[in-house]
Amino acid sequence: MTQPAPVLLWFRYDLRLDDNPALIDAAAKGPVTALFVLDPALDGRPLGGAARWWLHHSLTALSAALAERGVPLLLRAGDATAIVTEEAARIGAQGVVWNRGNTPWLRRLDQTVPVALSRQGLAHRITASDLMVEPEAIRTGSGGAFKVFTPFWKTLQAHHRPAPPQDRPETLRGPGLPDGPIPVPEDWGLLPTRPDWAGGLRAAWIPGEAAAHRRLGDFLQERVQAYGNRRDFPAEPATSRLSPHLRFGEISARRVWQVTEALTGPDGLPFLRELAWREFNHHILFQAPDLHLLPLRPEFRQFPWRDDPKGFAAWSRGKTGYPIVDAGMRELWQTGWMHNRVRMIVGSFLVKDLLIPWTAGEDWFWDTLVDACPANNPGNWQWVSGCGADAAPYFRVFNPVLQGEKFDGDGAYVRRWVPELNRKRQGVHRPAEAEDLFRTPGYPPPIVDHNRARDRALAAFSALKEQN
Ligand code: FAD
Image (cartoon, rainbow, N blue to C red):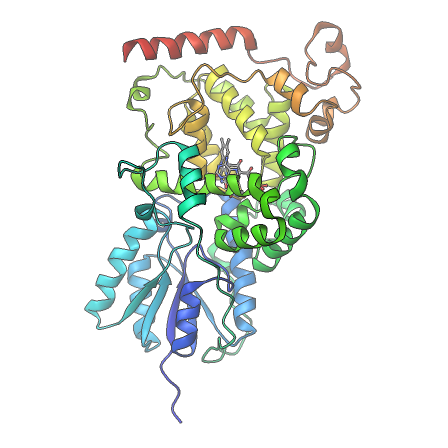
């Protein structure tokens, strides 16, 4: 009996076997050959360093999981439209299948690739996207897209329950593997070499689908009940840390939603509400593909940002003299992740205390976060700055000392990441206060006086408001 022709399954940021509609579709049609193409067109800009590290390991894990089922994963770098077409023709595929994109860039490819395929007489099928609800499907009462989170969340809960996730297909099989080792993206240079700065990332994370499911399971068993009350305290392991797994599609939001609901009932709602912020930001990105470049509130294009390379260097290296800011920036540098509360504090400090453009912060996060997300990162930076959808009001300027004292009362978080302050028993959030100067050798004095910086920010933001 002759083997049916293979189906080419094109992976993008959906690097998993579970709840993968394209995989299910492909497996039902015949033997599967998988493909991932490294192309800046996937994100509209090159991936940052930490995300590249994650991608390397995620693809390695996916390649091994597919190989167990005899499915080869082809790894190619270059122009995705050309490569998908080329590979499909080369393997004699009966067609190409992939999941609909969940960003404007992926959706652009969803348009260009079918044209190129049909020019070669090749069939294709695009299955459901990774989003819980398609942006076109959820509308305000007046028929527009949501710009405010709370009504979005209420509508999502009431009328748009995510479709149930689908299990990985039993029937998945490939045409067999070529001889030799399982392919890994070794020659793409995704991993840092000189210097190898990824030691902290290796210690903190295990990329891949299996680890994503373990993380979700542990979180739901041990921490979800306390999530609503404890999620703002950065010293505690109170949140799920699923963000990089979700970013690379190692677990689907539908699966997270379904398992959480099944195991926790209403206790899981505070957690699901955060998951809905991810969805909301993706929907915003659809309306504003330049989200990482342009403020959603156009008046902010005239904002008098400061050019302050020294301030930016102190911020990015965790040397501002404000312990909670420095702890967050060092946690980010070492582990590729930062607690959400601290992301808000460091964001406010950059944009409001230093008046440095939010785009500079967004860019730094893009390069250093393992979960650097084209929707969540700019969406949240715009939120922090007051120029985004449903943004924090411009007059909310976080006081980094009070925030530290409120959310890291005993200083455990600061001490973990700022060893210079390790020996301080009290006042860890106020090391610059006169009597303490002698006790914190090696720790810098504050680069700005917060109260004066706050007044300066409020004056600049009020002037902008008056002009508009
Ligand atoms: P949990 O609290 O366990 O939440 C579960 C999931 O819900 C997260 O994994 C994430 O997918 C989603 N989520 C939680 N909070 C938010 C939020 N505020 N906005 C959107 N989705 C959310 N998140 C990213 O995934 N990528 C980013 O690049 C990113 N950049 C950010 C930049 C700034 C300035 C700020 C303030 C926040 C940013 N966030 C980003 C949102 C949030 O900080 C992270 O999603 C969260 O800290 C991830 O940790 P967790 O998985 O333990 O979250």
